[in-house]
Length: 347
Image (cartoon, rainbow, N blue to C red):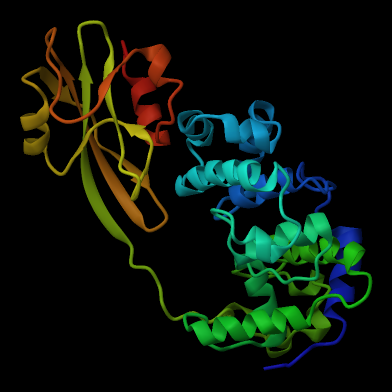
């Protein structure tokens, strides 16, 4: 494992200026609100997906005060489809704390930023680097891949001690001179390399500015990095969805629990099997719609919708309420639920 390859920072800064991504809407700004919003949205989400959501969020919530003043449902409704909904709830809580505890101004250091809801070490460092030129390392998934390959860092990142050592190595590589100007471009450059050149499979090593100092490229085995032995096991579940309608064409929706899949969103009632759904349906008549698959990162959901038309005055068992079309379309609904409902005639 190489200790500290020569001039990594300079190579990355020069490459980013000439070949990196400089056109994205959250770049070329030192506004921490915009940078923070983009960093949260980009967690486990592709840039192409984030672009539309980012623009819509800024149109509705142009600053942190506007976001803090919104309701949770307003935030979740705009977030619907991005997934990992705890990010949206933490986004809202963070905005409220920035307003309540910091007078509407984001803290200027990574250490202070990390105390806010939903902002981890790498995200805090990215905001501090981009907006305030702080000399602090980031280690998101793309950057972790770049640096483990450059350093030949083959320790198992499933171990906390190995993760700490990589943070130390990443910090040692930071630009020494003029960090206020170099840090934003260096941080962006590492992100760009991981997203466009140093890919998980078939990296374009010949185009990489770090090829000459990269241990993995020299040994011809970049795909063995990063090393992480612990993996998440993929699972599968079947969910039965009650599509209950009343005589006025309203839908029965309930809010999901604050943790787990679709946490905090409004949804059709979910049941483990057909019998449980029928028992809770309130005596209505209906029929099964085609089963469809919704793929999450580590789970496949086989969704079984059942439409039940209820007589006047009846309602399904459990918490929830009736929502007309104008109401439920404005709620934060999971993307597959919204897609299902819009495809049902008369809903």
